[in-house]
Amino acid sequence: MPACKPNVVLIYADDLGQGMLSCYGQTHYATPNIDAIAQAGMQFTRAYGTSFCAPARASLLCGVHDAHAGGWTMNNAGIYKSISTGERTLEEVYEIIHNTGIEARAGDMFLPMVFKKAGYVTGQIGKLEWGFSTTGPELDAHGWDYHYGYYDHERCHGYYPPFLFENGRMFSIPGNTDVHCGRAAYAEEEDAQSMARRYDMTGRAVYSQDLFDEKIEAFLTAHREEPFFLYHPTQLPHGPFFMPEPHPQVAEDPGLTRLEKDYASMVLRLDETVGKILDTLRRLGLYENTIVIFSADNGSVIAEQPGRTSERRLLDGTPIDNRRIRFTSEAGGDVFNGNNGMSGLKGTNWEGGGRLPWLIQWPGHIAAGQYCHRLTANYDLMATFAQLLEVPLPGDKDGRSLLPCLLETGQCQPIDPQAPYPGPAWDLVSPEEKRDVIFASQYGPVLIAEDGWKLRTFLDRGGYTGYSQFGDHDGTIHRTLELQLYYLPDDPREERDLADQRPDKLRELAARLLKACDGNFLNGTPQMHFAAFLPTVLTGSAY
Image: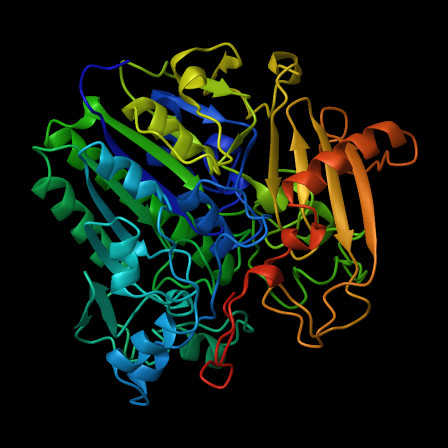
């Protein structure tokens, strides 16, 4: 155990599948700064978030999986737009949010509180909290000494915000005048008229990530003499994809459309931020005593384009039902292979929807250049830092401390930077460890066991097309339940359902998953975590 308190920087990407990073196999471009974290520390092969953004953030910050009954909640997004349109004041927005969500309970423990109890200063910069909308007082109550960024997840879909917040105070961003934060269209044809409309910079003056970079450097500099925990939940590379100019690495790539170049450029812009953080730590003399973690909230997304790739249909026109027919890069036309050869995308409970890039370095303590094959969840971070800093946790947390794994190499293998990403090495996995990872999705919860067995639920929508992860508007959440069983070491793409062949294993895992869901599989759907909100206040999607 170290004699001093290490600083901690957690960088949390938005909608970043494993395959979008060169250390996991991306070939259209390289992400050298993100890759450097893996080379200086550990790269995890079996790390999970959950199926989409808000539950993943709640899980991370609360230290629990997102398939429990109650415990945390989500409201809707979009309300802060009413400030831009002049419909409401900030005070009115705060009042609505504080009276339509579920507030923190006495005795609740959130990730920043672990650090505060150990004498750290805490800061959060970027896409703030799980929301979908939050306020300054809520952030204060969760343990943040400093917070800067968006208070509304829908606003994060544009990268040119008219205003942001710092410690509860609203600040205008000169030159950013679009009420939609400069949000681009999700997909357009690449004719001259559409391109001119898409890349019109009227009202788009200051890119949000540039502001975040400045605030990150200022936070690190201001607190260089005391232990700190900095959490940077970036928007990047959440769609709609937009960059004013393609990054030089991809600008001349003939295999990419302009929209795909924008997507890649957003990943590369994030890589630049990571490089700036590492350089600032070196300049301040903090690099050796800082733990740096890079992760994401959920799995892969695609640059959806008519006639090229779609989340709803395969290239041959077959509808994707996510019961048996799922998205794969080959069948769905993803030139990036963002889900790294797995099935599924963000929002699903296939491996491509929940398995993440996950990297960590701590010079002199974590062995450099190692693949770690331990089953891991983002909600393990609270337990990890509680053990490191000797802070007691309440008994309702689900995470397992990663500290023994990080300081040893029992489930690791050396990284060969010249060789392709190998994926999990199942011969190094410890099947004796009875550890499960749980996460929820609109199709129901899943359980991934340490030894590679996976129980997947499919909760039928019953043909109702208005249903999504943001609420089942006809009041009937699900009609039927199907349980599917996969053995990932032999079937990483989840193509062979073994439920009929192994009813014993199915029953065993189903009992464990039902217990984890507090007796109701429906707790493993986002619909069970939405607070009552005024639907007439909000427009647009919280996606």
